[in-house]
Each structure stands twice: as structure tokens, then as C-alpha cells.
Image (tube, rainbow, N blue to C red):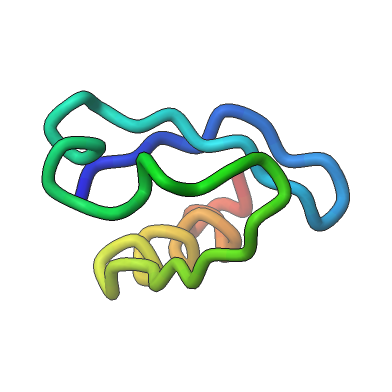
Length: 59
């Protein structure tokens, strides 16, 4: 599955999906406001942690 976060407002998230994802999943059946479960890649969690920590000089 390939998706891109387009916008986050509060608890609402807008996602952009590529045509292949829409063709091979049931996401094309979802309507605005439907709940979905999204799990984040473990690598993304490590990157987020590193970015929040900052560099050694605090930048």
C-alpha cells in the first residue's frame, strides 16, 4: 500500500492514494469520514525519533 499524508487537521487526516493501491485494496470503497487503521513503518518511527531528538549540537 502506498499513501501520502496530504493534510492533518486535529484528528482528521487526508490521504492521497496511488491508482495501484486503489485497484488492489478495498480503500476505493471508503468514503470521507470512514475510519481506517493505519500502521506506521518501524523505520518511520526511528526517523521521527531522531528528528525530534535533534543533532548533537541541538539543531
